[in-house]
Length: 420
Image 1: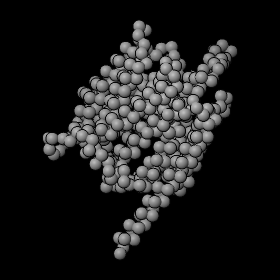
Image 2: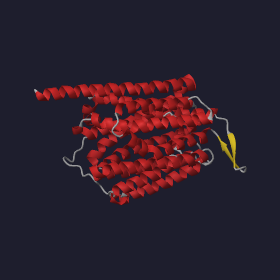
Image 3: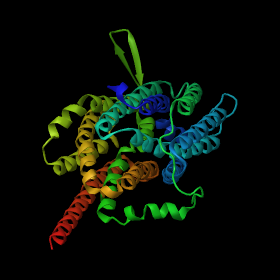
Image 4: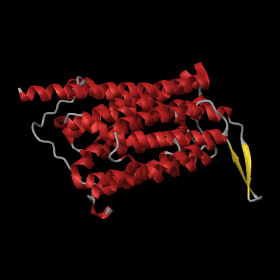
């Protein structure tokens, strides 16, 4: 059935998989990189700035994709990634090391991602149909999870000792994805209208004005931000804490094979555990929640998700940490599909593109809170962060519930007015 998808879709899934495999060996550990090279404050600050840059670039990239076309923007972004990876190699070579140059190159890569991602998402919608879209996103979901799992397994074992070699591999992969994007993907959108395009900030803000003034939708987005702020702690505060606090332990298997587990390797194992649970049980949970009330399942998922991460914030017991991942994984399986379904009911169908584009910014803002967690965690400690995660989960429930109530009330008023 994969062959039935448009060639652009297949190429995008392939390039995304390849780049994520190598990227997941490096970028989840950059909080540790900057903490060791500088300190926790600068690590959190730089990562927050990096996410902010990608957030702004994403806003602009989504707008440019509609006035320039999809492929042109994707190719430009891939070229920028190549340049950024070359810079990261030069900044982390055996002969010269600079965390500041590394940050500058990461900023270029973030701008590139902000240009590529909205254009790629728009391109996928351009060439898919209502009948193929669900299958397309299902395949992409599996590809994302599998690529991240493979990348984290390799990165957890080789990040400390072979960082330079991993950067070289990432550069080679960027060349491959650039070639595939430039030669194999076809343009799917030809802009219409005047040749004079407004590139300023004002037209961008005007295009999102309707979305921002929809209070129920904004509240629902805030609930999503609260929950995703928890998730992005894994590669920030939790990663730094495990790397600092976990004393390496050696395990012997079959009486001959010795394996040493430190904080970074433990983090990769916990992430792999989460990914395996998601991959194996998504279908089972999706079948279970079918025809059941979505709101209670979503709220329960938020709370389980927050509780699981709360345990990861302070425990150093391997078994307890593993059980916490089971809890948060169950919560994730419960809230992700129900939240997406409820979101589809909340958005204004006449402006679905703008609404869904704005929903994508939830991830960028969540990443900013994730980076901020390094600084906050330094001040309040693991137990304090655990309590904060639970509070954020409850905020997610509160914002989502308020949004749904307001939308239902608004729908009732509209229905009454239409009968008069």
